[in-house]
Length: 292
Image (cartoon, rainbow, N blue to C red; front, side, top):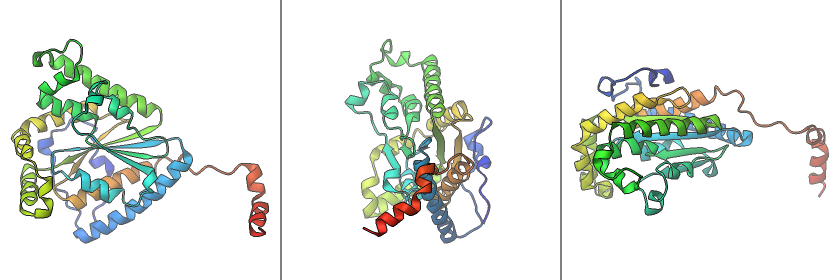
């Protein structure tokens, strides 16, 4: 099977999404790819146990993509072998009245994983420079001082918001959060096929919303703003990875492999050693338990 190299997907120079393929051929059957994913996610689960014992790092996995890009199923399949206490998933939808009563990053701050755990953001703080950029009228609901009309949501506003997001990530990275940002790169044709399946299969009807078709008409705008966001915010401590997503099994395996291969390079993530007193008395403690 074709080897996955995380640098092939990492955004380290200016990219154009239209020039990046949405299909990745691993030269292997879907069944084999799923088996490889099982192996990697088992290793990831064990690594998280060590991460928890070490207690100095948290891992934040950010997933973005167009509707139907496979975020939900990727989360289910990649993190299936984790201790349930070791991973927390947050799905960010339309802000609630409580969330709108705070600055836009507040709900993301309070959802950050604690040290020793993985946090997964299904849609992320980048919605605030993606959906709101396509629909700037949404910004008015945030009740920001001096933002009174859509005309006030100008390029200077977006420049400042990108700067705030970069500062947010810089701050949490400096305090022990390892950040992975994945864009699931789906073709428009494959999105159409997946939307049709939602309509054709009764058990998937509930996933369909007429709003999906309205947003699909804005495809080019979304692609432009995704491209801009990725290019502005892919930095060393919080890189973006563009993942071909027309095949769900391939996308899942690629994401899992990138996380595992890069995390295992942190050779300081080790289970702590027992203190000398406990270590020297292990036989005594065993004897006490065995003689109860």
